[in-house]
Image 1 (cartoon, helix red, strand yellow):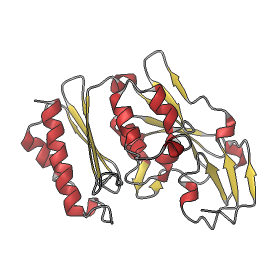
Image 2 (image 1 turned 45 degrees about the horizontal axis):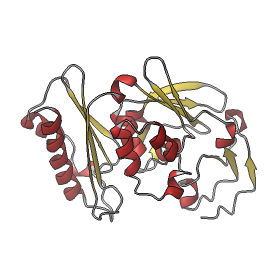
Image 3 (image 1 turned 90 degrees about the vertical axis):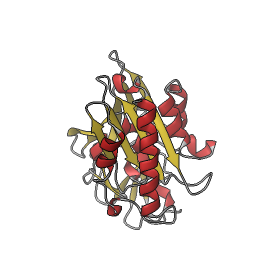
Length: 263
């Protein structure tokens, strides 16, 4: 999509560069996917030279928002859940080498697999305001609906921190689509907690991520009761799947994951 209203590209850009009518540019795969008539300038982030990925002494991994999917998949290939979420893009190598982790989060599409990954692993996100102020928010709270996030005017996503303990946990992954190479209609990730509990992350099927946490091993009944809190209105209704089907598949996958990780 040609953004014909853009008159200037600022490169490299910093938080203080922002003004109304600006848009932060990462890989651009989301930014250039639809008309943006209000955008006048693009603020280029990759040219800032942020290190793609850093591993801390406690095992935590800090991922720059500008880290590409290809780089993430290569650097963290030993973690099965990372590899699975990267492949959920069902995209060519061209997209993998351009699309960024931060861009996928900020686009806030229900099927965004980086949303699924970061929420499932209890990630935290570092946000920078236009005046240089910082705030840290849980990935589970970042996406508030289809195409909406906690980002304020001029704020940008700087990095994502994955806790080492969560990265090393046992996980189970289920993904469903109407077509073999179709967009994710349901994506459910389970993670075994160290104390014997279970966390279950539901994305793609719902307007925003939902996390169900069980302090101890849940029974099939416990899981069904927890899932019943989500009504049909919580599920997405579009050409990629109707709410009732998404709800059914979510419950089906959730029980499979419970059995795999608990029993």
